[in-house]
Length: 346
Image (tube, rainbow, N blue to C red; front, side, top):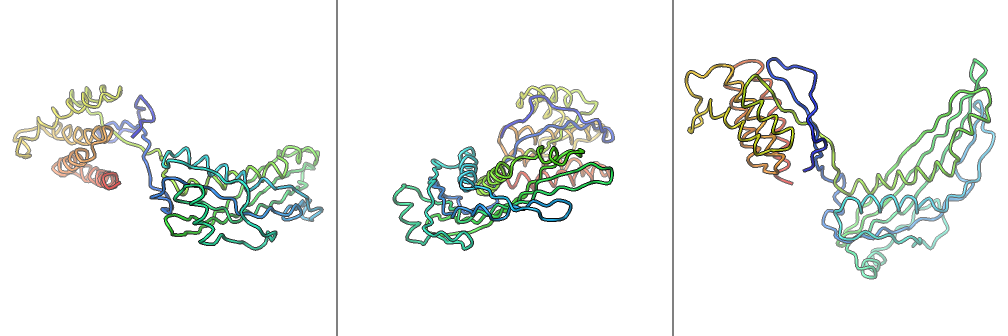
């Protein structure tokens, strides 16, 4: 697990007697699609027919279609596949990711999808020594450039681009197909010259190639794990050990922080896990906060079992306070416990 910021940033909000300190960590989330979960070597395959130049590029002025552009998009599938390849390589989840650039589709019919046969897919796996294929069967890119005259005499223009794609994953003899779509919009500033508003927009080819790359990133990204920033909260209260532990935690001295916080817990809880008699309410709260902080410190060390143990201890200590605030903290800890259980499984 990677810490996103080396220093802990303070939240301005006070929660009763405890001040929350917030920092962010990257948390690995499983892939949206599991079709490549057991793959080691992956070949990305172009199986597209090139889009006709006169398909899907309209120019609309004040609500009237005035022209249909001719746009060469022969590199559209490659932009898409390059982006998917890069996304999968950067995930570091595969031994090898390669791209077969030249289309395997022998037809010239752009409007009808043609999938590779099982025999063709097996032969590609054998020829390139891979155990999985990611095949782009079809990529459709289209757009509209629209310009309006506004009431104040100025003009406004935008380019809206659309993409639809169809993919097949072949891995260990099994196939899985899915579709990915995306939309991007570019807008001009209002100006008195219509030509100048249109000149602020990218060319149709540039826009659609950019969109093709975006679709490739989405497709490749759906097949690999994602690192998602998630918040973690620590508590600082008027207690010597809790505050000292936070100072160590600031500089990523996790074990020093744990040692300080354990003093605060041990001051309240004896060896049998019973709460000692005659302990002040302030010390009981400090112990609960310290236990919650210890859980996060163990999470940072990658010891999810001990993190779970101290999350459970914090849950118990907050319940022992017998207050509405303690019950509220138990709800928060229950959510954190669920996150830890998921990490232990993965």
